[in-house]
Image (cartoon, rainbow, N blue to C red; front, side):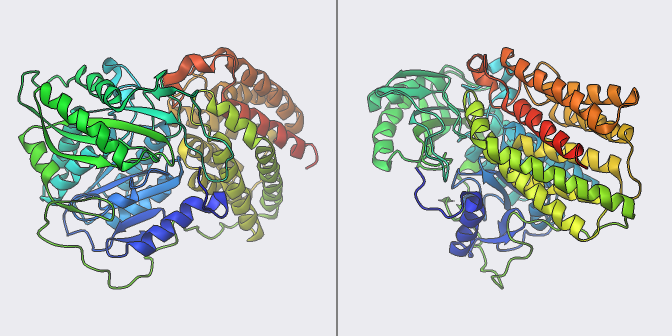
Length: 580
């Protein structure tokens, strides 16, 4: 368990602050993460990596010459927001374009994708590359759905070394994708991890048993087996990966591979070496020549007791990139032509990590300011409701996911209410107030739900505007657009077992009731009832998207956490509408 922390909600920010204080030779802080202490050479492609906290040395520890130019760092097991990613990339880029790289998790895909669109619109050519190395999370025929785990490292390094060599953006991207296509990982664990402030791990296995085929966010394994000896564990790891060779890798003797035996948090180095001893023997027997292996903690999951094995099958070019020099706080290899320069100063070049720049309020009418006050009251009710049910939401999410939905929703709703109150206190109108809440929710919550709630609130804020007192029909139109926007961004539809299963009937019912002439409170009550019924019905579905998809059958009989939280929230908002 995590023993040393202050406020659990501040853990990720404080950890990043301490990391920067300890490693100013390599990094400097910017809003949302870190970039290299020395500027990126003009015209060089910037490789920006990122994801949630809790995986050190990924991601901040991999920033430095020969590896990443910057890292966007989210809350614990939650992706950074699009705004945070964009800020890191803006500070890292030097005119050669940007490659955004991350593990293939829904929240990361959403936030990094949004950031790439925004950067490209600003004139910074940006391409995303998601790492998909975990063979246990999807069949080979659906490799694009696989998670990114410890295979992040060789893929990140291939791209970064290519950028360091001066290759143009298109070549760096092609190199990264080739490395990803040749990388496979598989993991086992003996216990789950415990988040800061939590009193129990995200998953457990019975004494004498181990989980097999697991991710790095506290998700349970795909299955369980009896705890093996070290040699038996090595045999399972090697056999699983050799059973699926990339199409362009010859099965004949003489194949070459970068090999990583990765500790997930609490397996000691000596244990790893005992396992690697047998891994090396088995690979040699299979005719695999190992190139500069790494054994240690490289992509962790807090205090999870587990290990994973990664094979990156090398061609001549990838081998040169894998063996190229790197000098970062947590990963060093070979020699570099230049060493990182110490920063000229130690002050942050932007706001502290996790904060955001906000614009002043737009001109607003008194009517809109009155609506802003109602919006603040509604967001307070949302915050209180989420806080009351956070543990329940976490338990529901842990059935087939990683159990952090309650934590993320609490962070997001608290930040949204605080930002809205500050905006309304500065005489902002309803639209600006809700937009401030949207940005704050996305920034603090991160993850899939952070992205979707940010989009949802932005759509509602746009409908409210800053000048008029909106009609019930206008509010319903905003909710309808929010439903469409969430589906566009998240790619989910009704039946996928997500919040969409509740948002769509809620929006449709609200639109129909207001079109029939019902006042907003009455129409909202009717729509909230439809939402509650839809949330309960998700218990009969199996997930087709997100982290719960690999454990789909486990979730039967349990409602979707995102759907359930949305139903709770719209009912809480109804209570505000009846009194405002």
